[in-house]
Structures are given as C-alpha cells and as structure tokens.
Image 1 (cartoon, one colour):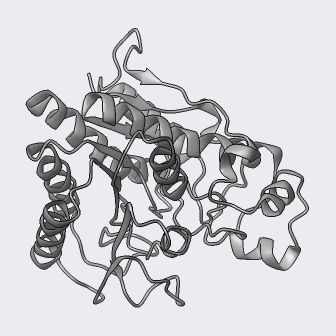
Image 2 (cartoon, one colour; image 1 turned 135 degrees about the vertical axis):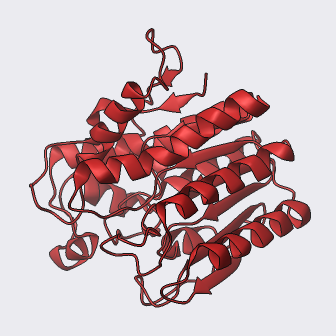
Length: 305
C-alpha cells in the first residue's frame, strides 16, 4: 500500500475560528483512515521523529531557531507568522519537517509517498511568514542533497501562493530546482526569484491551468532530470478557497494531482507529496480537498508500483 506519513501532534490545541485551520490535519488523517488508505495494522503508516535545532540549521539561522523554540521571537517578527505561540505549536513545527523528509526517503525507496502535512514554503532562513516557521521543502531537499541520497531534487510547488521562502533558501543550491506556479496577484506581495516562476492571472480556469502545469512539468523532467520530485499539492487553487483567487474546480484539482503524479511515475521519477495551503471555514470540506492527492496517489501507486 501507499506509504503515508503522519504524527498525532500535527493538530495541536489552537484557537477556534483562526484563519489557519489547525484541526485539518487530524480531520485529514481520519478521512484517509475512513477511506481505507491505511490498512488495519497501519503497516503503511509512518511516524516521523522530532527534528533538532542542529538538524534544521542546515537551512535556518540557529539564533532564529532558538528564539522560536524559546518563545523569544521579536513581537513584530512574530506577527508576520500570524499564529499564536504555544508549546504544542513548537512541537508540531519541529516534527512536520521530518515528516516531509521521511516521505521523501520512502518515495526514494518505493516510488511514491504522501505526507499529511508540509508545504510550509513561506518560512525564510531567519524569519517565519504566512503561517510558516520552518521550511520543510528546503530542509528536505538540502538534507537529501548533502547526504548524497539524492543528486537532483525538483521542488514543484503548486500552492496558489508563491514559495518565496523556498526560493530564497535554495537560491545557491545548483542541484535543487525550485518551480512555483502560483497566482501572481496574491500573497506574498514581495516575491522571491525561484529557478522558475510562473505567475497566473486571477480567475484562471481548469483547462488553461492544467496545460501550464503539464507543459512545465514535462519540460523540467526532461531538462533538469531530477531523481526526486517534492510536490506541494496546495488546495488553495480551488475556486471557493478563502485565499485563492483562481477558478479551479474540484475536478480540475483532482486532474492536476493525477497529472503531476502519473507524469513522474511514467518517467520512473519518485514523488513525495505534501498538502500545502487550503483555507475554508468548512473544516470537513477542507479535509476532503486535502485528501484528494492521497486518494489519487493511492490509485496510481497500485497502477504503477
């Protein structure tokens, strides 16, 4: 069965009504369980360990990390994160990056794996932003490249918001390629330079969107020839998302995930998925949207692997 990565601390105690829906992670896990995508013995469920400050210092400033853990981040800088500090938040923030790393290692072994969190692409080297404190994508790519577990890693970011933190952290890593396909007139309003940025017009619809995704991915797989793709399957591209501005239907979102994963698997390129952004007052509907990439991956895992 499809390898799935999750930790019970992902949905820490959190204020109800906050723009960021912290309970979506446990709701997503429960949905994946109800769909039978995790077997009864949970043999395909993998639980990450907690990363240390030393681990995360490969992509983040040590002083920033210590301030984050000790609740000593300057108030002005902390407002940029947009989340209320708590020990539970710190615990899950130190765990989730290792969840993405574990999913990537499983993908390298088995061809495909899904992390039921991740995609915190607004976190920069020495500050957090946009609900993101640690950049799991940059951390995972850098760790695998430094260890020699991967030679070339493609970060294929299809969250509706540009992966500015990832772009900035990875800018001097020639064996890590960052691609962000996002809504141009959306957060962050000061963009960073990814290796490839494609800014989309507001209200773009399914057909045009899927064409851009397909042509871009195929070209990158051909030219960069990665031996791992980290796929940020943000669901904030959906037409009803509170922070989206694109006009992608539920079917279009499903087709996007199927396109990305199947294109990679047909070329025998391993894929690790993360869930990225999604904003909705209907929390169960949000969990259903996030589960699409896992459902698609489970189907394709059976078909190709």
